[in-house]
Length: 516
Image (cartoon, rainbow, N blue to C red; front, side, top):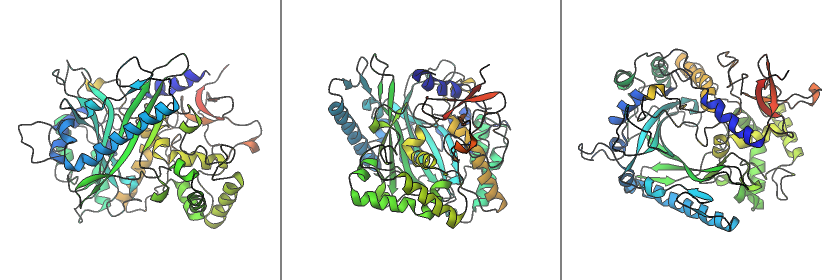
């Protein structure tokens, strides 16, 4: 398979993966996400409009808050400053590494930058494109029953309006407003909240009727009190794009940032990103390198990494990340764990014997591991538990939830998939956690690798691109079973399909029809 074809195929798979729309019983996101475009339109026009959240005192005559106004708020000043500094660093680094290439805003350049003028413009705004239940993250915020994420997409304000005549004016940036799931309503339990969301998944209404039921007393969104329960803002923007050239395939870089809300200063402050390993900082500091190695290979922390619930201390983390798509243009631009292993650089952190010994100790002290059963499994987990590594795995470009564009013509018939295979493949696990909360059981917060969802024994994904169907990620088995990597040997394909490796040197591939 050619290199170009390898990168095109995942996108084709995504475009053919549109699930049933919200409200239909078979929709994978039922009870865990709200993607109905007409309900989102109603919610954006009222309760979850950023104007109501960020500046409720704004005159009712002003229907929405522009990007220009949003980034002049004192609470958003640190966000704008941090984004501007990231752009400046990106441009300076590119000029130093590629002095012969042009970079800037506009067409005809080697690297075409995101136009910050549109972000800070009076003619742009953030539009609600989805609401996602993340009670599966209650292992981080247990007292708050996890999180709810309001996902907004940057959009140009046009005179075309919405509906039949509209052309999508969306720009490549999302802003996630992460709020505490339970918030200030201490009388409401996690079980009650989970019950509300699972019940919402059975609703058949759409548009205004659905929005009304979701926000009514006892509805899934009733307790999302804003701005009281805001925890942080997460931003993801396409910082630059490089068209295909005679010397390079196409390339798109995505900038990821997190801003925690400080109740004392009443501002969103730049924060370390959860599990985003600061590779460069670790590799040049011998003490930090030794501390990171000792911390991660501790049996308890290694078991947490295996389950996907480990939280790396902030001193090892970065405050920003660039996720290139497709991944792998140069050693420094590969997945986040590149260079941390023996054989990938002279200043590595982990040797094979380090990892093998740590896996043995973790198994002896706590039982068999679920995912990390080899050096390759350890490296893959170290990559996909980071923000950048996750966004480089089965994403739509650099996004996992672009959302359906309700400003486009006939959004209910849109051919644009609202989310990535990674997102849809994880919904069975998330619903299992909600059901555990509802039934008073201890939830199992563990998750599989980003490439291959953990199904909890469910057959709902069998034969689909999310598990073992056409386009699913898989493992090419050796002729001798004993040589198979224990971390991936279960990544098989459904009957009639065979696993085809992405490169001659790799054993990770995709399920396609068997060659005759």
